[in-house]
Image (tube, rainbow, N blue to C red):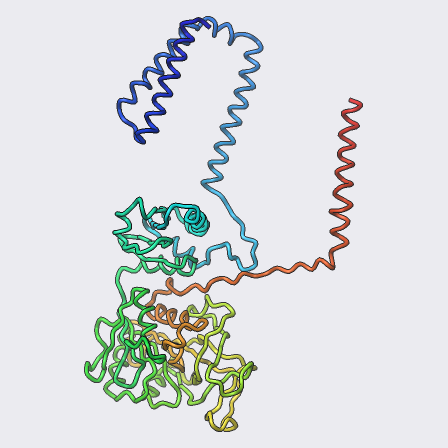
Length: 505
């Protein structure tokens, strides 16, 4: 190698280093950077040209050819391994061996993600630091499950101190919160788990807010009451969180269900609906309306004839639990769920009713389909006609505590839309003091979204983490023979064989 070529190689290296340092300092590619790049290329080619004879003789030797052959194989193998790792990071498969499939997204979440038509953006707001980075890594593991299901899922981690524009846009009040954005619609997630993230995604799919009307004028539960235990203020807040608009309506004054109503809720009337009101409800159902009935037993609500037209009857009894409580206790826990979309996600946790009545199916018209939602078990429930005389009219379970009905209302236009009804013989599970108990909240919200024909927003109950027990007492001798005797002995035999082969080779 000549002295001139060495100088050229050094100058070429300096040009390349200057380019790299400039790029790091400026954090952007500036056009003048092409000058040192071009200088590097020119000096490097010039050095090779000067030493072309030496290089030609070096490459022509037998040792060099063999070395290049081996180097080429190593280079190709390196390229193959890099490509394999890149493909593995891009397209990879995971297996979940947990009993509850707690590491896998539910079928509902996967179906929802398959319906994406454009980018679904996750913005996780946090603050840099040791604790912030730790929480960030935990969130990555969760959101990655969503990203694996669809290439439309995009994740961006936002430091609240570095992106004030996004903080202002989404109205971020604190860190460790996720905002979703899809087709110009956004939703907030405070508690980061699959249940709430999937529900938030479903909210961004909705193009308009639904309006839910609550009837008033018959002693129904107060929609605006947030302090008293019998109020429905908690339910109203949940509906608003799910982007439902809650309003009240007096059918005696309006004469009909409002035309903008997506649903009507009748929650615990204490006095009877008059004929004009029941006719207004019936006309609404004939046009394909949706109604949630939450009726109390032993009350004259005046809706028996209306429900009787579709084959549903509310019996005036008190359904009680006979396990773990003295008979006559106010609360009746139930965890026997039918395969209905409202209760399909529910696990073994209970819904807590408060002295519910019992529903009965009578003569159902051919145009109507009635399905069970929830019922008691035969061995754990009974019904009495009086709470003071518990021996009078005692009935054994099971008892149906929830029905759904849909189809063409009797006498309606056969070409018209199908009505939808959900009925429960209790209104207390919707009230402030009971809404947060066990699965009451899920039953209430799931019933609403079912009637709104938004089954993709059905609440996902968190998966229960199962425990796998291993009885070592039955396998201790097998483990002893394998790990204490077999494994060391096998290693000794293999080691002796290798030693003898090398010793006498």
